Image 1 (cartoon, rainbow, N blue to C red):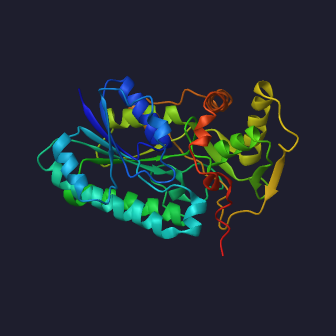
Image 2 (cartoon, rainbow, N blue to C red; image 1 turned 60 degrees about the vertical axis):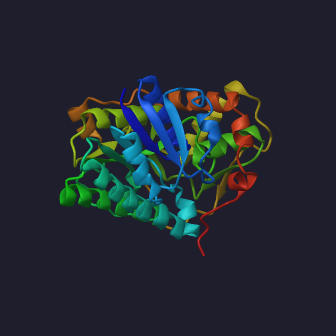
Length: 338
């Protein structure tokens, strides 16, 4: 049985990835420092599994290397990161520490480990490193032009990984994915925030005029792609992972409202509310994912209409998920700038 370390496994994508890895009969070690966006609720169904182990640890810790030598993983999926753009505007330091310094320590630890052990690192990144893509779609050779402190910190970590591949022959691969949505996502992000407000009869805040466009991918499709990259990806390569389906924030909100009306009675305060935009808000992200489709045979299976229904159904069945979070983290407006 292959052993896999998932860093950031208490988070949204990490917990969904662990679920898929366990179903595919991997042994999974989940390493997470348990910050505000980490949630033990996300992994409660794995606790009794004999194929799952949780270790509370920051990837900046020197103990990380000890864990590598102890468990000798066949692969590492690095999802340990601060990810919310608004928070990066308010406090860039935590993003520098987690997304750059943390990745540096992970790379140093993995460099020492991989000298004597066969393994592979999959570093998961974002489409935001490419910046605004006003027309067309960015492929893996498109230059990085990050706009926010978050995107800049992820770009720096991607370059660090790439430099370790070239300089030290580190067995690593970088993936850049578009906007994820689905079960277990923290409500600082658009879709779970809207769902929370729908459940609680609150207005639906939309930045600016709602015209900012994102490429939306269902989280389980992303996780399938990550496993494909681990099993078949080429060392040193970058792989874009996207759905090829763009929707602006207003379109997303209307689709969610349409599905919500089929399941629950909406309160009188559930209405779209346009709010002041975040500073430096990118207008459009769009990936060209032809490489992973042609080279690895991956394609997304879930269209947005189906995915948003699956997402809403999960939150309807798991309303206690929101109770496990701080109301301050749910309700406070972030990223206003200064």
